[in-house]
Image (cartoon, rainbow, N blue to C red; front, side):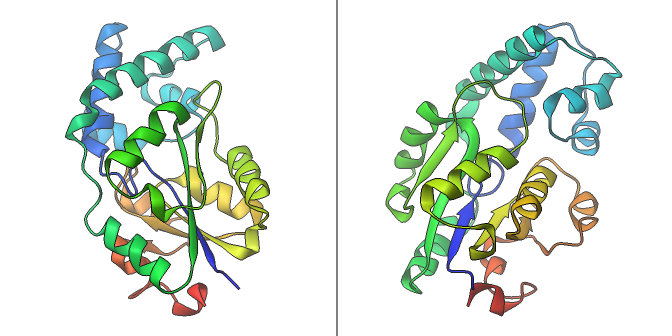
Length: 218
């Protein structure tokens, strides 16, 4: 039985799709890489980020280059972040799940030291029993971070529902045996999310009503 939701942050609870794209374009321009349209970005997006770059340009980068590019992206993203609001209905969905007696946590690939004050600034930090952001090098896949997150909570995959916006969220949830709902608010095309066979919603409120089977939440 699922009594706990693990929420993704970027592209799920935080409506930052435009900010991510603009920060990426700033990084690409700074490194002299070819420009990328939004449709090209969404069609190619995947994790690990090294594979995303290979899809975009057919190029491979060294670990040192990838680390520098990751740092550059985060710096550009941080500068533009003030423009990113919470996703429509996010606060209401969080408080509604708490009111039903469920627990929830936040797991993000955004850097931990920047994540905590950002979540607090939106007034929703108290909704979560645990908040984990990225520690160490970025650009990798989410599975190992989800495993650590669940271990810290004392939960197993079948006890939780993961709500995220990416194929990486889907893969991480599948790997640990968790239920998963994909929110169409991030970098992927909706068709790519649908191809996973998992429930895909266009509004966060639909994570507990509508196309998602209600017994997932019971």
